[in-house]
Amino acid sequence: MAAAGPSGQGDSSLIDTTFKWLAGQFEEDYGWRAAACTVLRCAHQRVCRQASPAWLPFYCAEAVGCHPARVVPVAAAWLLGYIAARLLDEVEDRDFTQENWGGLSQAEAINIASAFLVTIPFVLDRLQDARISADLKADFQQAALEIALGQHADLSGWIGNGDGAIERYWQVARAKSGVLFALACRAGARSGNPPAEILNAYADFGQTLGLLVQVCDDYRDFYGSSDLCTLQTGREVLPVVYGCSVAGPEEQVRIEHLLNQAQTDKYAAYQLRQLLDDLGARHYLLLQVELLGQQAEEFLQRTGAVAPEQLLKMIPRI
View 1 (cartoon, one colour):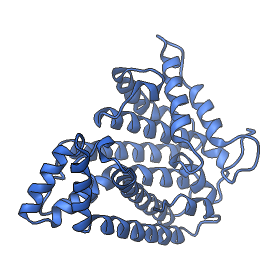
View 2 (cartoon, rainbow, N blue to C red):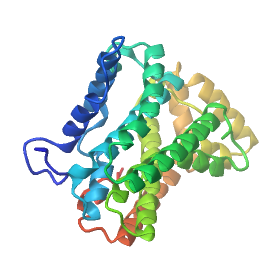
View 3 (tube, rainbow, N blue to C red):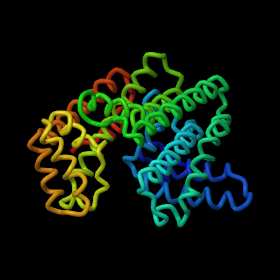
View 4 (tube, rainbow, N blue to C red):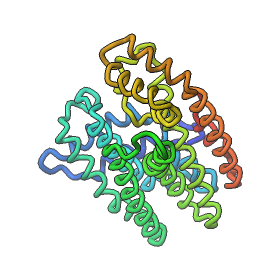
């Protein structure tokens, strides 16, 4: 295999190789291979930058001394789950656009996401070590269930506001982003067959990284634009959840009113952000980013990683 390792040597990347390998696993039937490859191509362009989570299995494998090229089936399986989660999340959150996914309809996207999830065990069957393959299949199945339950809680409005809302927010974030990132890190490290405590440390690092990414996304979505009217502002983003949890009865009513107006009224959007800032929401998010970043570094130290520099670079900052 002529692909480069995660450290960047060579003319091509393992991400490119993994996508090509994955595309070759689909048979041409009813136009299926073309549709699947369209999704893979769009995902490659959209979500597989150098700092993308797509690199996590490779970086973790390299950190335990496993040659990254051996991890291609594992990374391919995780990519299938990651892309499927992105597709379903965008459809469920009404963020899906045909332009971003090669002209595919929402119905086609749901169908392809479902097929990608079903394909994961067959991809893991390509691993040479049957024991590792069986362990990873169980890990992927458990993660898929936890992510689905977390997404259900999110879509059903289970987080809500008032007492316990912050705790419920973190539960959902762990079940969605945390579990997905923990799976990427544990699966990559599992390829090197390290001791259980090392695997757990990689999983803890991944979960913390997933939570951190979620908080950073919430922060950038809410504070990164001068025009909140362009945002799909929901009640489950952390600034709103925190603000409602510390607000008094009158402030909660005002937050609810501003949320209903913010996407069509620029001044209401400005007032909403200002009110939440007064309640300490921005400070709370920035504090969580700092704390989670420190925790991620601590978990990475516990792994005893051979070359943790690339993993350290994966920790986002604001």
